Amino acid sequence: MYLLEFDEIVKEVIWGGNFLSTVYSKPFDKNKTIGESWEICDLPNDNNIVSNGELKGKTLSYLVKEYRNELLGKKYKENYFPLLIKLIDANDKLSIQVHPNEEYANKRHNKHGKNEMWYVMETYGEAKLLIGLKENVSVEDLKKAINNNQNIENMFNYFDIKKGDAFYIPSGCIHAILGNVVIAEIQTPSDVTYRLYDWNRVDKNGKGRELHIEDSFNVIKNINAHDLKSKKENKIKNDKLEINTVFCNEYFTAEEYIINNNFSSYTSGDSFEIIMVLEGRGIIKSDYNSINLNIGKTVLIPANLGNYSIDCDNGIKLLRVTL
Image 1 (tube, rainbow, N blue to C red):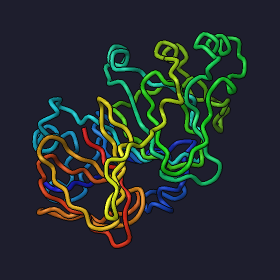
Image 2 (cartoon, one colour):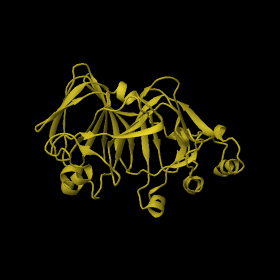
Image 3 (cartoon, helix red, strand yellow):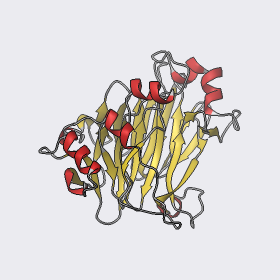
Image 4 (cartoon, rainbow, N blue to C red):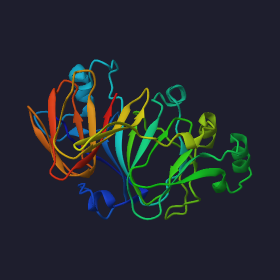
């Protein structure tokens, strides 16, 4: 196989913007509020299509079915792609929400649970995240406040964020992105989200979006939000290369690569790799093909690719994701 790129799956939402089209040069309608670009996804109703090479026009699910070992690697034994990769442009607040774990999602929806991480690529104005309940607030306190139609907005932790910050959001953790930010999201392959509160927003017809109160309280866990920010453990740092581990868990390993010169690596057959460009420009090359890299670009590197290199004139910053 060869270096793979895909057509993005575009999600127009009320809280989206046009940063991805105007700044990251994504091929989206600049007049629409695009909140999410699904870069790599293998779900029944959302499946990315290869946009380069001899496999152009094939879906990711087709690749997994026909080339599972070559694409995914020896470490992975399932018959679906294990991650969902997104870019998020939150021009406004997202709902306060929570995701189910594997057991609950499977039982309730016959789907996977959802665990995710956020890497802050850009902020443009005051940017905050909402993560978890305050230390002196219990799940029962929150439930009682909602049942009594009380204002719940002061019951959560709010974090000021800046470019380069990263947070892990496990299933059961209450969370919301609060606008003015572009985020790279790495998550398990699920589209199940329970809305707990949507800031009393209504559409042009005066209707609010659906809430999922019962499901939310069936899965909420009171998690210490202050433990969820990445401490970025450094692995390598020299004049040519810096590598920092952002998160490493049972679902994925995400590393920050800062390449100041040319970089060479290889896939050994154990796992695929995904790279997302956070800053700068360059080109990734293999024995089979090459792809130009610019901010917001995502490339899937098959497990059996072998050698590849990344060339850049003025430095490039990447998020590298593996199993």
